[in-house]
Every structure is written in C-alpha cells, then in structure tokens.
Length: 133
Image 1: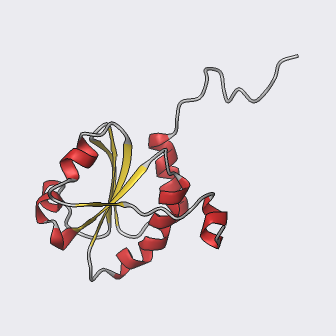
Image 2: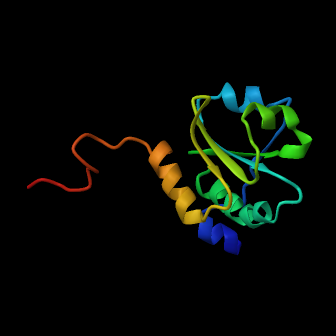
Image 3: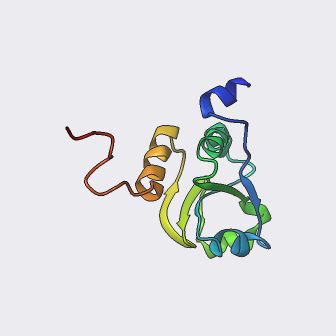
C-alpha cells in the first residue's frame, strides 16, 4: 500500500477522460453522481487542482464518478456548458447540473459540496447509531 493509498483508503484512481464525443453518453446519460473538472493546459490553478481531484477520485470511488475535460481540445462540450474560465468544476446528478464552481477549490470545500449533493440519505430519525434501552 502506497502513501496515497493510505490517505485515500485504496489504490490510485484516475478521473475518466471525457471528450466532445463521449461526454453525453458517459455523463449525461448516467444517473450516477459526477464531478467533472474542465481544465486548460496553460492554467496554473488547474495544475494545482490535480492532486486534489486524484485524491477525491480515489476516496469516493464507487460513490461519485470523476471526469476531466481538457477545454481547448473539446470545444463543443466546453461551450455547451458555458465554461469561460478554468478550472471549472461541474457537479451532475442524474444528468443534470446540481452545482458549478469556478476557480481553485480546496479539498475540504469540495468534500463539503460532494456531501451536500451526493450523500446518501440516512434512516429516518437520525443516524441510527444510538441504541434505545
């Protein structure tokens, strides 16, 4: 087990490489939760986001899917979502946008957003961790 494995709870996972050709069938037609990172090749803030996106991809593997779109190489999908600046992170659920963030984001904040939109509903009446006497 490597250091990244230790902190993320498993082996390194990479986001899905998304393009003009596969975006619709991969993200929009999928009822799963997705976080898609729109990034640019000459964007220093995008480069700073890479480790965070990789960590979250591994941490939430099986719960949230992560994808990345290189904006200059995929102008159709970039324009269709009105991405003007990078990095832009768009959260999808059941093929619909539920959140959109532009600019550098911390791992802690992204985890809050993931929890707010994608956390499974708990049992009625609370967490269910307390037992009654």
